[in-house]
Amino acid sequence: MNDIALGQYVHKNSIIHSLDPRTKFICLLILMISIFLIPSPADYNPKISFIILGGFALIILIVVILTKISPLKYLKSLMQVIFIVSFVFIVQMLSKPSDETSLLDLNIKVSIIKIIIILTVFVLFFVFRKFLHYKLILFITLLVLSTYFLTIDFGKNLFKETPILHIYKYGLYKGAFFSLRILLVIMLSTVMTLTTKPTDLTNAIEWLLHPLTFIKLNVSIFAMMISLALRFIPTLFNEANKILKSQASRGADFKEGHLKDQIFQMVALLIPMFVVSYKRAEDLADAMEARGYIPGERRTKLNILRFKFSDYLTFILCVGIITGIILLRVL
Amino acid sequence: MKIKLDNVSFSYNEEKVISNLNLEIESSSITAIIGHNGSGKSTLAKLIVGLLEPKKGTIYLDDQVLNEDSIKIFRNKMGIIFQNPDNQFVGVTVKDDIAFGLENKNIEREEMIQKIHKYLKLVGMEEYIEESPENLSGGQKQRVAIAGALSMECELLILDESTSMLDPLGTKEVGETIKKIKNEDNKTIIIITHDLEEARLADRVIVLNKGKIVKDGTPKEVFSDENILINSGLKTMDSVKIINDLKNVDYKNKKEIEAALWELTFKM
Ligand SMILES: Nc1ncnc2c1ncn2[C@@H]1O[C@H](COP(=O)(O)OP(=O)(O)OP(=O)(O)O)[C@@H](O)[C@H]1O
Ligand SMILES: [Mg+2]
Image: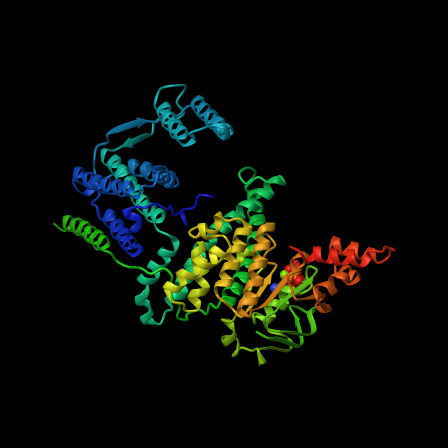
C-alpha cells in the first residue's frame, strides 16, 4: 500500500529527467499507441511482430538506462501487474486461433487421489505462505506441476472421456505477444512517473488541456485539482495505513477472516478515512483562501516550461516510430 | 494593521463560541491570545482574517468595515498560520508550497525564487527545498508554513499554535524572527497559544475563556493573576508561582528577589 506509482519521482541528473514534461507526456502517448498498433502475430508474420516488439523493448531498455534510476524500481512496478499479465498469457495460450492443429495436447485425467493431493499441496501453500519467499514463482511452479500431474496416469479415472487441453502454437505466440505488450506499456509509464516531478506533470497537463479554454472550461482550476490530488493521495495512504495498524493492534486483521468480517473491517476503515479527509479538506480550503487563492484568477508561475532542442529531437523520433508502424500496417 | 472588534458574536451551531467580544489591537504590536482548548481562539483568528463571518457585530481593519468586498483588499495584507501543518501544505514540494502564496500574489518569477530562498533560510529549511511533505517531520512542516506566511510580507500575521511542534531552539528562533519583523517593518502580530512561555514575547496578553475576554494586560499583569489562569484552564509558570508565594512570607530582600525572578521569567 505504500508503493503507489504517484509521486514516486526519483531525483537524478539525466537526459530523460531534463526533457520537458510535455514532451514526455506526448511521447508516452505516441509510443503507447505505437505499441498497440504493432500487428498481432496471429494475423501477420509472427517473426516480424516479435522483431518490432523486440525493437521497442530495446528502445525502452535504452531509455531506462538513460534515466540512471535503479532497475529495481522498474521491476517493482512490473511486479504489480504480474498477475494480470500471467492471466492474459494463460487465456491467450489456451484460446484457439482459426483452424490450426495444436502444438501440445494435455489429456487431463482426473482421479480422486489426484484431487486430494493437489488440494493438500495448495492448502499447505496457503497456510504457510506467510513464511515463504518467492511466493509468486512458487505458485506458478505449483500450477505448472499440478497441470502436468493431471496428465499422467495415477489412480482411477473419474470420467470416461478424458478432456483435452490444447495448447496452440499461435496461442502461445499471442500470449507472449500480449503480455510483453502490457509490460512494455507499464515500463513506459513508469519511466514517466519516475523522472517527472508531480508539479511538472500538472503543468504539462494544464498546457495540453489549454485548447479547452475555448469552450469556456477553466483549465487552471482543473490543474490545481490534479495538483492537490497528487499532494494528498500519499498522505491519505499513510493515514489509511495508520488506521489499519491501529485497528490491527486492537485485534482486527484485514487479510484473514470471513468475507463478512472483511467487509465490516473495510467499513471500519472507510468511516474514519472519510471523516479525516473531510476535516482535511475543510482546513485546506481555509489555508488556500487565507493565502490568497482565488479559483480561476490569474497567477504567476514558479515552474515554467520550455522546449529545448532535445525535446524537438525526441518528438521527431517518436513521430518517426509511429509513422513507421502505421506504414507497416497500411502496406 | 489596526484591528477593532465591535460586539462580535459567532456560533457554529446553537452554542456561542465567541460572545459579544470587544477588542482593539494597535498596529505594530505583538498580542498573545491564550485560552483553554475550545475557548474560541482559532475561531477568533478566522473571524479576523475573514474566513468566518460574525453572526453579530462588526470587525474593522484599519478603520474599514471587513465585509465581502473589502476582504479582497485586505486578503493580501493578512497572513495566518494554522495549527495543523499538514493541512496547509499545498505544494507537492517545499519550494512549491512557499511559491503557492507568492503565485497568488502575482509576484514575478525571479523575485519569487529570491524570496523562497530568503525565507527558507530564515527558518533553517533551505536544504529541504526540493523535499516533499511526506518526508518532513511535523516541526519541519511548521517551519515551512511559517516561511510561507512570512514570505507574503503581510501587515498582519497570526500564528495559531504554529510553533507547537518546534524544538526549543526552533521556538526561540521563530520568537526572535517575530520580534525582528515587528520592530523593523511595523507589523501587527497575534500569537495564539496555551503555552504561557510562548506568550512572553508579547506586549499584551489576552485571556479567552469560553469565548469571552476574562483578562487583558501586560504579560506581567496576566501571569501574576493566578486565579484567572487556573479558572481558564491554563497552567501558571513555576517562577510566577514562587513570586506569588513570596508575597506570603516575610523576607527582607523580597523586592529584589521578586524583580530578579520576573527578569528570569522573561529571559529566553
Ligand atoms: N468547524 C466547526 N464546526 C463546529 N464546531 C466547531 C468548528 N470548529 C470549532 N468548533 C467548536 O467551537 C469551539 C471553539 O473552537 P476553536 O477551534 O476556536 O477553539 P480553540 O480555542 O482554538 O481550541 P484549541 O486550543 O483546541 O485550538 C469548540 O467548542 C469547537 O468544538
Ligand atoms: Mg485552535
